[in-house]
Length: 496
Image 1 (cartoon, rainbow, N blue to C red):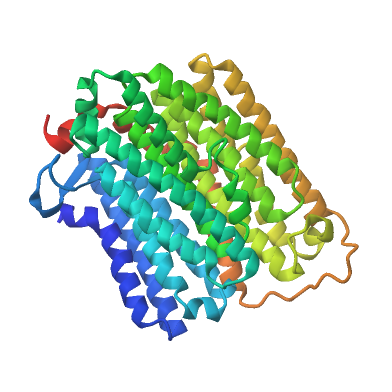
Image 2: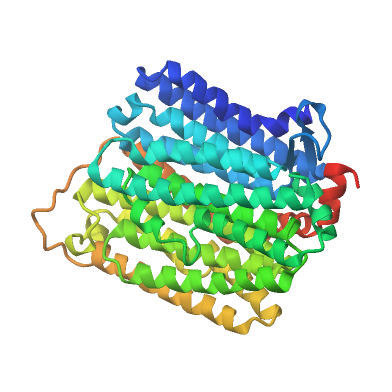
């Protein structure tokens, strides 16, 4: 029964996608199946979390082939927490899509490819085999490429070409790195690699393989200097696609970095994690400066995806219990905040017909409810207390200071202040100032439940996280204990 629970988060979206292929012509049936599948994924993930929390890391050996020879799926607190967040994001995006995705995109497979992308995400979180991680990444890439291009509009295709080109390069680097690693160790199971890589006498070759993985995963995570594709492609598809990409795809890249650089590449921490720390600081700074220079709602948010990835990297680079705990906590905050901000930008565009801050104004006067929702998410992104972003950034900065990386801690504080500047710019230009562009369309929002319900749900979750941060931090701490205690992970997976 437990083994079935481990594979269920992959099975659910797979069979849902297969069923949806047959129901694409029926809009209502496709929507009902998609939403039911999302809730089923949440329930299965919560049950699996309870099992892992109570009885520890669980392993599924596919075909009863024991590691390191067979394919393994591993459920620990970190991976299952990410599954829960994936399900929450999928539910909110699904409901939001009911109002915002046109019938043409639904007819040509929006719901199908959304489910297959989620299958790739869940597989990436659960796999214990580095080659199968590559396979799940390719499932995500193919599905996400269709989602970003669906609609066949010129600006979409331009963004899609940039997106797929850079991700194909990432895949080539990933496969090359896997080949180098297999050539050195004769293994692809990550738990087995953790032991065998220590027997390799050539540290230079190990570091080369580590840099290949860092570059490949760094492209997917949009770290400095490999982030340029993200602001060019993420703002081009409809908002539900942008929101789910923002919530999950770059986070899967960071998740992979955490797995590999806490389990496999730990023989020369001063080299590998020193580079990660430097990239963390540069990612934060370049992302926030890019956001500060924009005057388009979605592009500001897209650049802030990059800047917030830097905070996640910082905790990994520190390679301490508190640093990794801060990173795991930061995952929860940023997935909620960025998704909500993209949702709100979509509502603003639906009403006013533009994302251009110069042409917006008066939203607070005309739509106070959505303005309050924006304040919650924007305040959290900027780290305003007592919102969850404040706690997330506090934990990261505290971990940096404890490890005597005072400069990086100071950089994190400055980036938070500049993030506040970006959010205040959106507030002042779009919400507070008087709208002088009378030709800008203003539509009455129809199907309000589909537009507002996801925003309300995420806002409530953020407020709960603000009130009870210690409970979520306990989850983050237990997850990081399992991450950093690789000996327990290896023993459970391969019995050594």
